[in-house]
Length: 388
Image 1 (cartoon, one colour):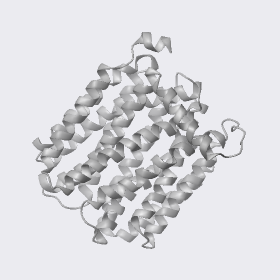
Image 2 (cartoon, one colour):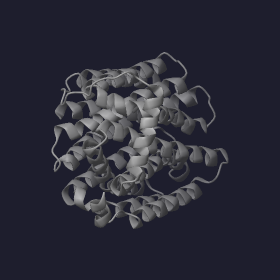
Image 3 (cartoon, rainbow, N blue to C red):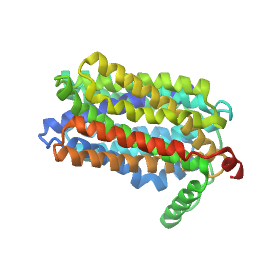
Image 4 (cartoon, helix red, strand yellow):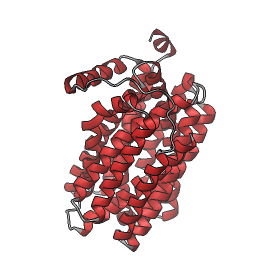
């Protein structure tokens, strides 16, 4: 568990610092303003394309070794940016490593914890993620303001450290026996797993909820980057990074509350927090000071942590009981990143149309609150769970 937490922390630091450095690199190379969200689309597009394959990879091979090679792939992508290769291609390479890494990092939790401790284990892994977001976002913004080349070099070193840390992750269980690879069988098996999961009320709830959350989070990050200079009249890289870090700090609080008050039998308690995420985004136009911005981002983060952690644990348990945790997490990643691609593409479109950022914030917040409200209303009942 300690080795997994260390690997996740280092990878999270590098992932979050890299976004701010990559956006600065795009601006330095004089790409148009709307190409920033497009850069993110290259990242999440790899998740979608590789989703049918990475889950089986995590279930077939030792998850610790999958974590090693996926972080090594991220390192190669970061080095590519350091030597001034195409930033979109390099960021897609980092996304490929992230796509392979995610099923392994979450899948191993079900192997090294008991049923009752799974939400706590998710809280720990999300805590290490959040700590990485805090440090990575702050360091990424500050280092990029100081030296873009220095920031990219530090990020590459961080990926190298994550790769080394993953070498310590043990073989928790015997990997599944390998068989001859078949593209057709892999894709049809992935589609069949999608269909089977959506027939189950708990799995459907978790997939829909986490997909909405991560899609909204990806768009919100770019919204905040555009909102800061308009509302607060600050144009550096540091403040958007600090606000991202404040969301991460809020997630720590929300995750701790979820671990205390929510278990797999009462997951529905976490759903109302999703509505308040949308409410928080709607309040952005009313914020005109840095202090208020920090407070609002902390509130959004706390609601996010309370909403997300129980749904992640619910889906991991579904995988452990049936198809394999890695395969189920790959399905989750597919829907999360499809949602991210749709929402970031929508944000790119409205940015290209130059709509006022405050109008975008209110419309986005309302859409999120209504979507989360519908999800809460349609949550599975205990009778539905018992029947499945």
